[in-house]
Structures are given as structure tokens and as C-alpha cells.
Length: 251
Ligand code: 13P
Image 1: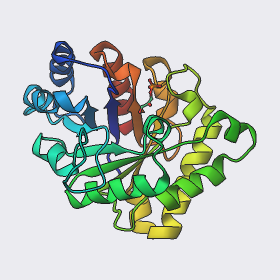
Image 2 (image 1 turned 30 degrees about the horizontal axis):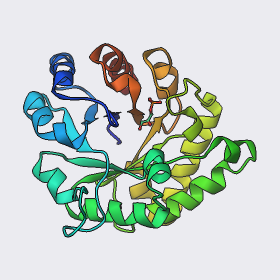
Image 3 (image 1 turned 90 degrees about the vertical axis):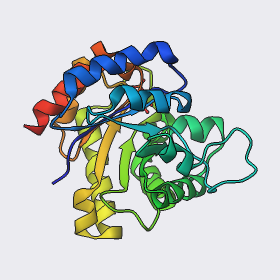
Image 4 (image 1 turned 90 degrees about the horizontal axis):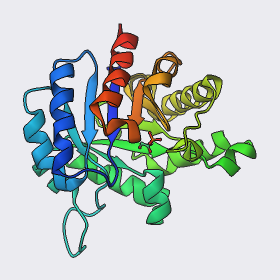
């Protein structure tokens, strides 16, 4: 079945000083019963990979360009991430959608390029507070799924992260019923588009203010296969209990 996944998104945080946190994590969670992925800034990918070498903890990028290479100053290709040791990349994070005006089409193109480069694409979806309050959440998720997820997706190359925008970095978390509703909906939509085999194997993560104190109840929600963690992934003391909660949920 689906192997659970604890993913950390460091966002625009971290210099070489933060690598000690990874050393601590690798000591506590090598050969874990769950998959662990750290997405540091691209500048740290190579050094993070060296620190985590042999621990089983993987590294990923936070974004990639949709093109394979070319005149795109400041951008990073999927192949460059892979060359720096990454095995995954986050695409379509709401902060990229907001800060860089990324649309579903852009996200799908990036995910496709990432998959073709052999990376696992972590495609982010999520509604704004206004959309939630207008009872449009499932419509938004359906549109983001059909627009952002490439046809070549499989259980190996696709992970979906449901991150309600209003829960990111705010300390606010949806009710467990709300999380379960969206995750169940995502699974049903995957089944309808890709069939039961793919729907059964794609991991669907929850993200948005996941902390040691709420991880256990979130991981008990059906169809939640792990978490995409921002702030609490920066410190081993915070991320480690979240990983432990997921290991407990994995049995
Ligand atoms: P926080 O865990 O800091 O709320 O961030 C969630 C997130 O955006 C992960 O991608």
C-alpha cells in the first residue's frame, strides 16, 4: 500500500548553519518506517545530501522551471535538482502561485518536466479562506487537480499536498472532518481520472500548521498519508516528534 511520507519545506530559510538539524534528524530517523523528504533551499541541496547520505532521508527542490534548460536567468531546471541529489520537487505551492503568478497550466508543465527528469513531483493544492467560506473548496480542488496534475502521473512520480492557504503559517488548522472530506475527494477524483491502481498508490499529504501537538490526530484521518511541514521542519526538535507520530500511524 502507500508508504507514509513526512516532507519538510524549508521555504526561503536556512544556510549552512541549519545543516546540524539534518544531522540530528538522520541520527534519530535513519531506516525509518516512513519516507522522509527534506526540501531545503536549492543552495543547500548538495550539502544537505552529503549530511543525509546513508540515512535514507531524501532531499527535494521547492520549485523547478518548466523548460529543460535555456535562457531563464535565476531559474533552476529539474535536471539540475536531480544533479544536486534531489529525488523530488515541490511544484505549485500557494506561495509560488501568489508570488510568481503561477497558474494551473504552469504547475502542470513543471510537474511534467520534473517527472520526465525522474523526480517525484509534490503538487500543492488548496483553497483560500474566501473560497472556503463561500463553500467552494471542493470546486477549487477539482479545478486545481484537473489543471495542475499531468497525464503521466503514477503512484511513484506524483504526491499531492493539500494545503489550505489560510492554514499555512497561521496556526489555524481545518477540522479533522474538513481534512478528511478533501482527502477523500482527492482520492475519488484520482480514481475517476487515472483508475483504481493509481488512486490507491498516490500519497496525499496534508500541509498547514502541522505541529508536534496536532500531528497525531491529523495522521489518524483517513486518506492522509503524511504531511508537508513548513515552520516545524526547520528544527529537528519540532520535526522529529511529527515524524514519530507518522511512524506510529504507520504501525
Ligand atoms: P507551515 O507548516 O509553516 O504552516 O507551512 C506549511 C507549508 O506551506 C508547507 O509547504
